[in-house]
Length: 314
Image 1 (tube, rainbow, N blue to C red):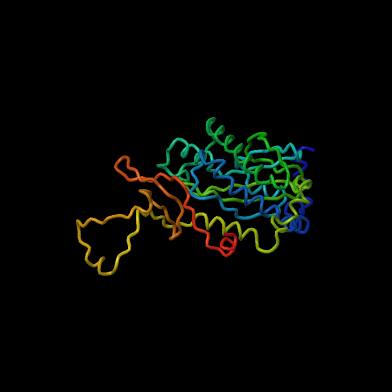
Image 2: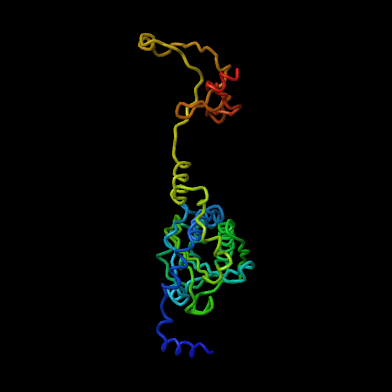
């Protein structure tokens, strides 16, 4: 059917022009693994595209929502999209890029960050920009594929890049789709990214996606646990290098003066002990280079085992 006839037919059937939450919304709510996979996709992006996009932080997953193909593609009309083909699912997925993606890539890759891309008038992508976006799409596809590894294989490959102009790009315009929206925080400002997939395409993974990741371990919210883990590993702590320790009275300390020489006991055999928050960690060798002192880690500190079990064993 020609496109004009399809548009005329759609005008006489207004229900085709909007999302159908009764059928699509329930499918999203029953797939907790889907949220986990897209969160993992956001975490995979810095490693996958770090050399192309100068990200300040890991991307933010803003929303996962059910939509019809007509609504989702209509909202992004004119934007550059990467059409991905899943060999395992025999289905198409889309990565829909921010309108500023091409110029942002040029600015970050070639170091031209002096002018905000938002100040430039819109224009068609050049050949080199087109190739850069294609390479970025391939890396995003790899990050997305890895994010779904725990649920099933996607086997994604880049089919083509295109400017969105056809609401039938994913098949039926009223077909239920899943749309994940992310925000990429770059040095040049935030960039939007959308991932679009047909719900029918995810049918082979439905059983796996319907299982809450980590649910069999019992207790706790896995999303909260991941956020806590990320916060803990990023926490800043003080590390101290201890050459020796001297027992001194308050009177000895009060009598200290500039130029006085303190004799070390040498209990560390000339080595420096590395401590973190009072906990002994490593023995290090003191060195110097380029006008700075340095530490070379030699061995872990073997702590004495004072447990009851150890005493009974001896």
